[in-house]
Image 1: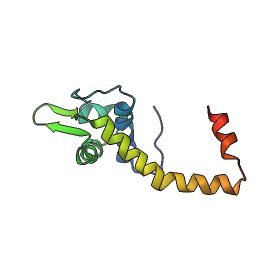
Image 2: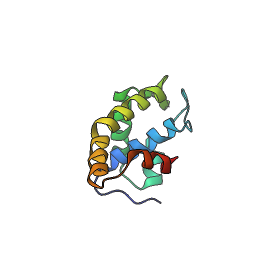
Image 3: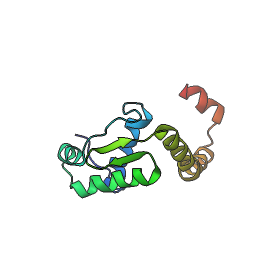
Image 4: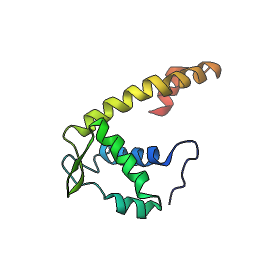
Length: 116
């Protein structure tokens, strides 16, 4: 089992894992997601932590709660999540990356060539 990153709350890390299932198309629209109990057991975490992760995805409009049935991937979830993650990356992570690129005097064209 993958260890938890101590710099980030566990519910955020669980939300990221569930989001990755949606982004990678492992979980498709209208498909049921694993239950809170199942995830809590698999990851050895408190069910409330999993509930908090799911709730944040419900608020984002990526997951919908169906009473008595569980959590399901919402219609358009991948597009919503892509938009959200792109905005988050461009506003939170990219500025730090640009500073690091400049500080290390790296050539962006070379970096892109190496990454391809």
